[in-house]
Image 1 (cartoon, rainbow, N blue to C red):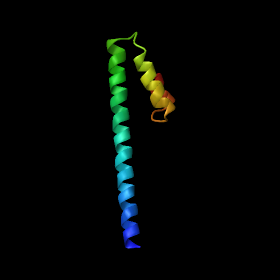
Image 2 (image 1 turned 60 degrees about the horizontal axis):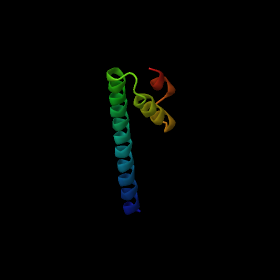
Image 3 (image 1 turned 90 degrees about the horizontal axis):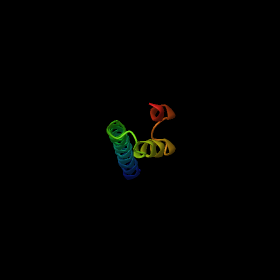
Image 4 (image 1 turned 180 degrees about the horizontal axis):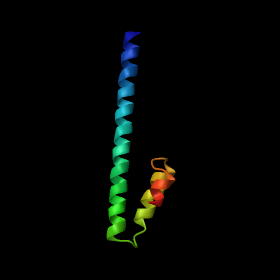
Length: 66
């Protein structure tokens, strides 16, 4: 029972770390996309990146509209 509890704790810690990484990567993608939009307003990559993040549930619709 103790080994199972330890395994569950380890799995939970790994999941929390993975979620944190996804949040950090999402923030970096948003920052890079916004920089690209400012540097090259005609690029379609900004919209594609934000649409991808929105479809995957990583950002809200309000984030896309900013």
